[in-house]
Image (cartoon, rainbow, N blue to C red; front, side, top):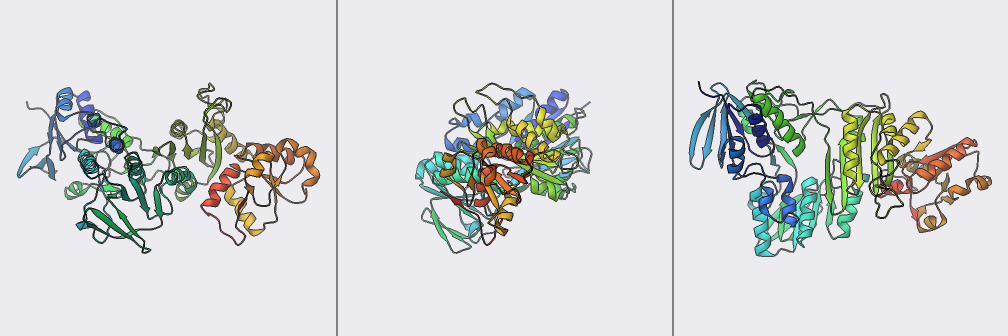
Length: 564
């Protein structure tokens, strides 16, 4: 009796994971991978760091060679073999290798075709050689070009994850980068105030950023690029990168009659089966079920791709695993600045129908009295009705990743803001605080929900100020902090001196209080509330106000500004 045969189309993240799990599940099936490039199981997320020289050995990108992967898991692996057709009726695939084509028969099939770069419709782009960073072959070309031509400048079209990582790689290669992003800011799937840390760092080291602009025309002549923007700006460079996002690679599946979802990616059930129960799909070609919004999303991330591959491989080999969905947990950095997120942003939560709210917190990543601490700025989103945590966005040090990962676990476990108050985190002065950043986010959110926080968001405060700049504002920081910078028309009364300066505060009018990041303002607000004042603490303090002001979220004839 012949063995059952499993064919996997694609041998990178989802495909390689599927093959390995299928073999761990079943030793007695025949497993074949067809991969159209020369490599399988490579670290595509590590490609920018190879260009940067942080990963200095190309071999480290190759988690397995076709030979080593095949040997370990008893797989038949064919690289430079592209599947160009699937026939579900006859259970065959048509494979192209060079000038030759042949058919191969399967019992089960896994589609792991990934995603493809979206090439924008720009005049001249088809006649212009450009770089992208998707495969090992791509970075080989980039590395060779840099070594041979010693370029000094590069233009990156697109300011998302890949665009930011390319910019960092070029910085390490002593190439001056310019990013062109059509949205209001780079990393547009994050809130404005979160990405500020990375934008500032980029500008500090010489990266030029053009936002709310798009490329109208490109040309290449005598080893130099000319890029014309929609506002008439003309830019020149030695290299051109396209990093305008990706789309699911679904042409093969679509032609085979496999159902696509509302996002345009392949639709599967929780077992990673398509509308044909013997055909599975996994990875970036597949749409994801978002655990929080309960909606389907296109989310091309390596983590979900690997986990989906594992589920598909197990089930195609006779197992029974389920994929519950995704939270969209992700991170990107530029030098020492990190931004990360999980779950839903505030805007996404509102769009999904939640009665959502959020709080800002900004606290050290370990005990303040221990040297070397850095601040983490967090925007924590929750449902006012159920009190469940819906998401978080954060920026700061490398410890930011730990906080976002912990919130991801909280969301996955249906925890509430009240749970965040009491989770027991690791603590020793070099590694954390007795009251962790996540505890503090829980404190602020839960206090607001209990009606004990008396907080007002910076956006709301600026709106009020723009309508009436004569409102009562108190800065409760030290005199030294106040002299360095402060909000316009704010009066300085140090938090410790509030009780002895009550005569200077008009009890008949609301009073808006801020400190640096919110805690001292909260203390002063509670003091005054207990004495009958209508006091409000500006959540996140002057640092949050500064972030909002710089992005001009709220206009107004008066505006808001800092005095120094």
